[in-house]
Length: 280
Image (cartoon, rainbow, N blue to C red):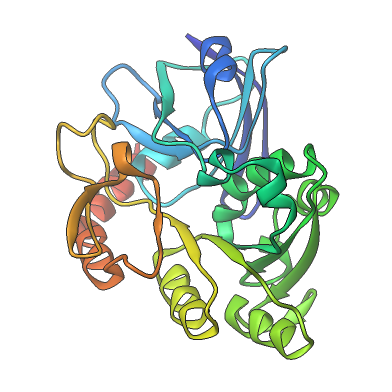
């Protein structure tokens, strides 16, 4: 069993948990993910890793209530436990493959949206530990949905933007990037993590600006080992599996329209299950 040692709601419908999982914490790297089950007969839910403590043997996860299983997760309290946690899964961030000398020469930008802020943090932290401070644009609907601000600002040059202008700059993350570009900022590498529609428009802009861009894909996933094929994507005209080939891909080659269409195909069923879970 994987005990929850800390649990808090950090924004409306968004929760942070610290979970005991020593074997996973010992092995995980920035960019990888987990699959969790709330109960032994529950669905398998993929979650990116926000942080890990190898000495304490704990993982930090952040999730948003979007369906039946994440709703059930939100009902867990400190002292409760997940039935199982499998991980780390997927490939680590490609930044880990570069030498420190290479990374020192690059101006790196991260663009995070919503709960996509969580998997951005371990990459920024990893860079900071090597003396590299990247820029980070953190986008949210409004002030209430800005998450992990203190953590992100401690390891990056942070720019916050909200759709309604209630905090930080006003506008989408793409507008913030356009503004920074107009101010003279230039970047050699971009990592964008968030809703697929956000990543799509970020990639359209970065391609225009000539910035190589990596995205972390979060399609429907079942087993997380490449066997079921549920998480397949088209990248550069080839079929890839997010769980074993990713989750990070060249954003300028991802077929986002296909990926978004596939992510909507179980929407009706999920809405029914969510309503049923809340009624119980």
